[in-house]
Length: 165
Image 1 (cartoon, rainbow, N blue to C red):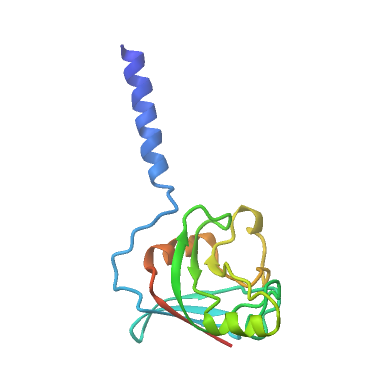
Image 2 (tube, one colour):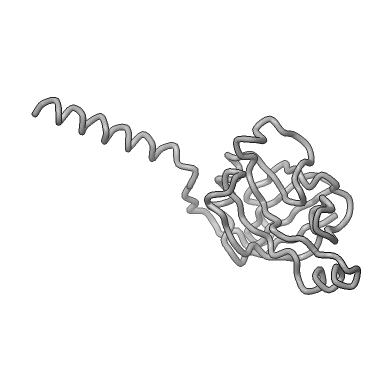
């Protein structure tokens, strides 16, 4: 009986310890009302109205100059979009989706007889890219896994994001 209690106690303690390592954080501050990305500066700002709540150094797509036009071009979109989904099981730790392509993006690509691409996210590094630096994504915006945990908690679906050159 004593051995069973000891084993149950160890299991309970291990379970509580695992809770402390969760990638899902809680945020109780002012809501993020806008996200601004400055591609040239490699900065991302989380704003509550005009007040900067957080500022991050970022990496971009492997061809960072210019607006994303086509699938596979390695560019990060520019313009006004929204955060429209989240992926808790991302291979890049955590991710929040950006609503690219919009109607104008689709129409432009179609006129060129190409696909606009999609699946543009703000994401972490994930296990494969822990030592990666610079611009290496296929058009996404990346930050560290720890920073992504904060963004995932702070930025809600429907939040506008302005990506500037």
